Image (cartoon, rainbow, N blue to C red; front, side, top):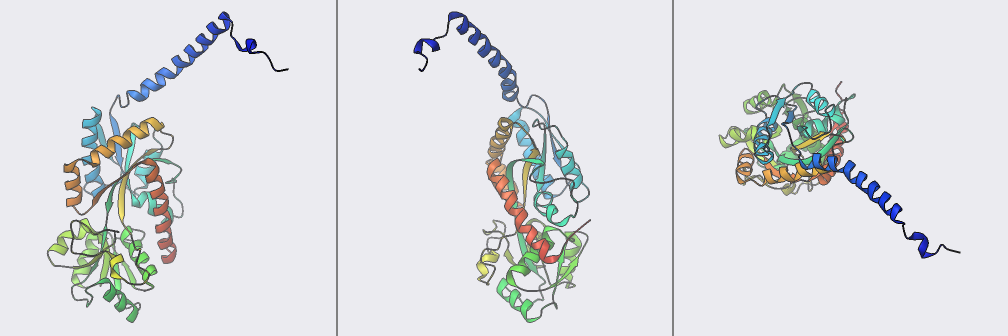
Length: 339
């Protein structure tokens, strides 16, 4: 027979013991809850795995200043450049997952490095907590002014007519400029010779001088040269036209077979070490979204050729996974592998 209802009626002594147990549990949970409610109670460190002056550094310092206003705590920017940003990412990875160390990373360390380095000391998916996407840095297809190509369709036609006769520049093997061109070639079924340089500046100089015929570079790096008429912009590689180049179509608008869905962009976002408390991650993500809605921030980022783009933690994680897949296909196609 089932026990009677009377068996479930606690005695006064039982009730007292339960109150003590529940009270003890609440007391144990309270400090943890209060610790999260008070976050941040001290300065926050933002590691940027690039040297001062690069776009991610410039934007990161801008974001850090706004976050410090919201939090009432200093956000100290620390540049940890070197080894293709690996040094800085290792510093973020090895930090305590308490929200007091963040990383302003980009597509290079989070999406490209896993595909091009044979041995990488971190896993972009397993070793970090995604917090928010911050900006998209569109690239632009550029040609030397002497090349008889006024649009992407004409460039593709030239590449197919003279396979291997035209050359393209990049800032070095495994960079977004290099792999974006490889993705372009793969999608359009064309071939051109890769000429790597030590950085975007020398590559652009030789493009202007005619030593190479085309390249894909960031809008921010090429904008001044485009506006001065030193190079010709054929298309941007983002899914939408860029506010800084409103008359330049997207690659996808070209109508060329294989390029209908083409998109290859740089980007930056905020991450932390793996294992951060969800409540802290959510708070940072919400506050960061407020920063990215600031009109002054939007104007500053958009005015330099990039585009503000917020994605909360969960969506940012899926975005990173998709980007890793995209860049790995370009790396495999070009047989790009670095030690």
